[in-house]
Length: 150
Image (cartoon, rainbow, N blue to C red; front, side, top):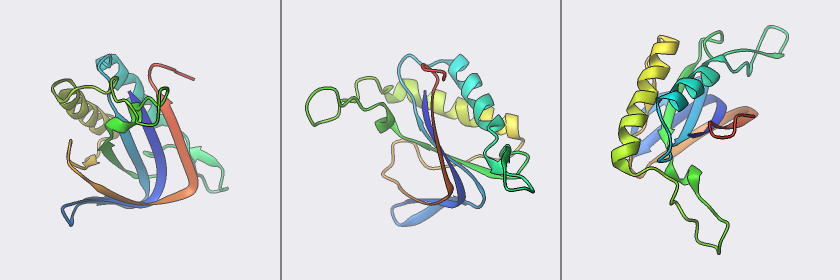
């Protein structure tokens, strides 16, 4: 799994001109799922996201997690995070999971994140054409790949 995690002061997802969901202070998580992903990837990544200390404390030092900052989380599926640009100029998405694999893992990820935070996780719609609006706070953007745990 690959995730692009952005600390936001607000974010929204729009589908067919209608706002499906929005959040205020929190995290926007763009999530790419590959065929080789499993429940173990979900557990590790959800734990990492909920414990990332990227919100400012009273001294404006990045020292608080999204839970400690009482932030919200929005998760958007994004298969293009697994684009390979090694050959030519047209990205290949061969590593991105097919819907029959990705959809159950996507829902399991959202459920797990909700259990770990005790909050409702806002989402877009898997496979839909979405427009994402966000105000990146900081800016803070972190990329995590469960296959390359740095």
